[in-house]
Length: 440
Ligand SMILES: NC(=O)c1ccc[n+]([C@@H]2O[C@H](COP(=O)([O-])OP(=O)(O)OC[C@H]3O[C@@H](n4cnc5c(N)ncnc54)[C@H](O)[C@@H]3O)[C@@H](O)[C@H]2O)c1
Image 1 (tube, protein in one colour):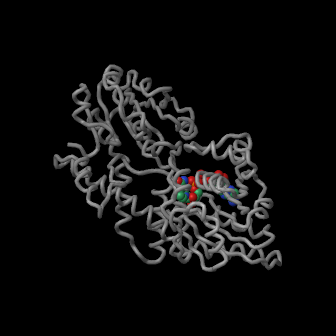
Image 2 (cartoon, rainbow, N blue to C red):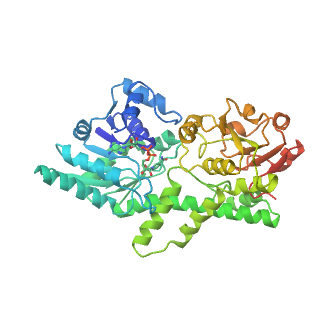
Image 3 (cartoon, rainbow, N blue to C red):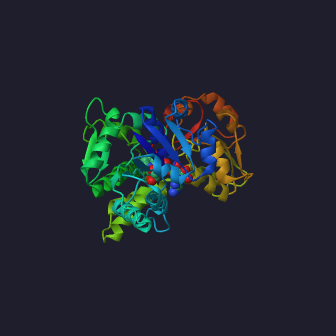
């Protein structure tokens, strides 16, 4: 099938490459010429395990191409995926300007039947707005061309995006007409050979499903974080509590880790957007408002611990920071807890020596050449002469460190472990003061 993917970010590029990998002819459009240049030169603009190989393989096979040419993109694919960003607007609602601009571009240039698929995370009712935008552009041209609008939210996780796309748990398709549903079935057949994964529903339900999934996961995290803070006050250990409840099949093991808050490009904005959608309809989502407030507070939990240990005035102090990305296996720092921590340390006069396996370039882009932030080529070099080590991202390479080397390099042997990577007793046995999350 001929497919166009509009927006070549985390979702668009992974979707485009994986769809090409099963034999489709995919054209990826982005308005960011720099991104397209990187792709045309054989690179990829993001860090995502396994993606570069798939992109190269499919470009080589002539099934995957990149362009900034809107007209060419609209004419290429019978199916047009919209995978552009939907960042939060000032009031927390999803900003739909990129989605609607993409829809208008399709309407302006399409030359036959099109299935327009919203893959971006968009509030309920966006499918109707996309339909109206395309219809308006067609009317302006005096063209009478048939088209369908489908909601097909994406559930991939950064860091495991290729695997998630290739082996999805479910494929949600919101559509109102049979022709489009049939095309979506054909498109996704290669990804569900073992058993049926397509969950077909109306467009509004599909749009809400994506928010429901992210809101539920964010809720579990905030719940565990609040409980962790309580555990500390009560002299309990949240890790033991986690094991005690995760084994209950009604609860399950996923998303039960406490830490220093969730970040990324999805949970924070999607929770906000759902609260906003509800408010626009006269509903208050009490649980989700608390989830968001708890998460904002949790992003400060590490700095609060640091202040309790070192005092409010941190001037002249330096902290080694392991992890900048909002989670492992990505270079994405959107809404990352590390950003709040770094700003809070700066505000109190401290400097930071950071190490992250892939996100340091992104940090440089965000913090510019701020002299208070330096970067280390290796985790150990960040420790030299620092007052303490702070861990914000649970990269695998941090899991089993040489504690003696940590102790000898730090000015004061203290670890603030924002992801509960270590057993407190093991760290203390190594002569290091240890502060985890929710571990008495
Ligand atoms: N990142 C994730 O893990 C993830 C997972 C599931 C769903 N989503 C959702 O998918 C959507 C995209 O997220 P992302 O992280 O891939 O975003 P991103 O910011 O990485 O990429 C979006 C791309 O769209 C391009 N773009 C914007 N307007 C355009 C237009 N009119 N025509 C062509 N290109 C245009 C931008 O230049 C950018 O490269 C969002 O709605 C997000 O909530 C993201």
